[in-house]
Length: 377
RNA sequence: GGGUAGAUGCCCGAGUGGCUAAAGGGGGCAGACUGUAAAUCUGCUAGCGUAAGCUUACGUUGGUUCGAAUCCAUCUCUACCCA
Image (cartoon, rainbow, N blue to C red; front, side, top):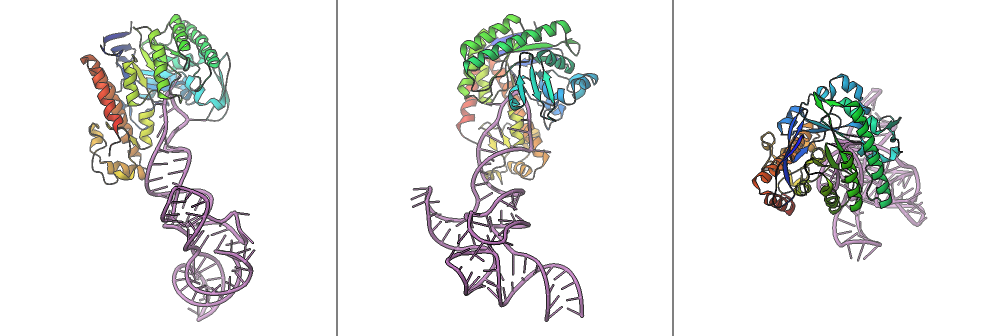
């Protein structure tokens, strides 16, 4: 049993756990920075580690197209290739089926893509996704799913869910035959619950995946443009049907308050491009909510970005950070990426401590109250 | 002294009789971003007004015309060339 629930919160479904993986043990709840192309954009792997990241993501679709999974396999897998030595999770490419929708066609066999780099036609199947992820050697490989769009009618959601379940079984079969490794250990595999906004479909999807049996379960089909209350409902509709002793992963989420809300609903794992993407666009997270560092009001502001900023960033004034962005200097992108990841990772570390201390609800409520009250000035 | 080219909104620059408050950049001011086709994308950027609209605007002054950034004359300035 690689996942252990260490303690649970008395006033919510939040839980504190640890997950043993081939490249190390991670503490949950966990936030995983996204490194789609084998890099957390702008940051050195040692910086990502220094920030306290325990596990990062890579992406099957992108790495398959470039540089190619065989190349990465020859160069020591994703760990050897990138030098990141802690656990790594790879997404299956299922999400790209959704986000590159104009370029693809879904069939029972898999997904026909016209890839976004040179337009050439490619076929990604459940088996191929597993094979690629096996070559990448990630600690956790996600099953190849179909992520339906939002909105999505019930008939389509049902059809899509059924396809995802059939694909899940094919992934499972491939894994049983090929026994992919991560480093010296066994690669883990997580199923992905779909079902859009329909409670009965979420339940069915969860039950079908649990029936097949995986190392952990993700909730997908969220963060695809649905309103926030639908996102929470999707989580609430799936969690009760997932095993207590397996990790639960909400894919692609979320804002800081959303993450705390989902921890309270029993989710253990998160990933989101938000901290790094918006950082490159000039947004910085603060305890009083996000601020746009490019805005005029920071032009002469001598204060640090946030009172909780990492020492490597806290020495810079808001005025200087604004200057870096206006001047198009790379350091600005780096500093805010560093800062926002620090903010997220500290937030989730704080959640872990609060769960252990039995004060999670207070922790969550006071954070959210301040964060959403107003924009820092 | 003579000749040629030119002067457009914060900047660069297109426009050469009505569809022009004036293309396109840049700059500026905001907004968006949730399993990353994203150092990206969107909006606004003469003044007044919620708006219809009104008022100023394409170097100066005057003219032609129903109508001028666009045509004519004048002057001013700039660049280059010839003495």
